[in-house]
Length: 241
Image (cartoon, rainbow, N blue to C red; front, side, top):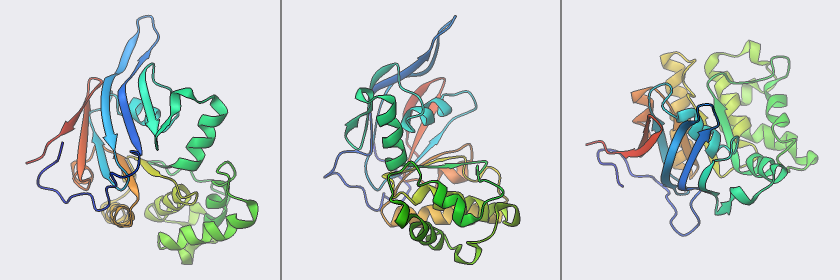
């Protein structure tokens, strides 16, 4: 369903399988009593889209993130990532697919404090299938891409919050994933650093990256070309006039 009043996705590609396709996907946590955290839902996100996901605390956003990020398996329906039926994969194959196809950006950065920016990005490639001989150069390129070529050797403890989040984005990008999945990426940043990170996400989207951002912040949500709302476990497209 199109969303009015926003820029269209710059590079949606309808010629390839969707990056994300949910077919009546739901998740119920076993009880007692059972909790239906995400009710069966349908969603298609095509390559090159920028989609934001909003909803109050406890609405099901974290459950959605865990399913789409291949951290939890749904208890109902079918989830296809890049056309691959993830429900047919064993644990090892799911881990491998996640490492190769999904880049994660979290609110709390999750950087190793006693490793340099470069080393933090290199470590992200251990389980991604990137040959050891290519990792250092790939990591350097990713840091240059996010504007941190001058901070390559700095430890996270010597970086600003915005710089730490850009290192985290470089780490998410280094394996060249199909999907950049961001969970409250500006939640720990001041206004200026938040704007820098959001502009970087805009730039990555403009280059063709598929971006999904989960957020409480209306201004962050407005950056997407589509918004999906989750409330009481119900997912629906949100139309903005």
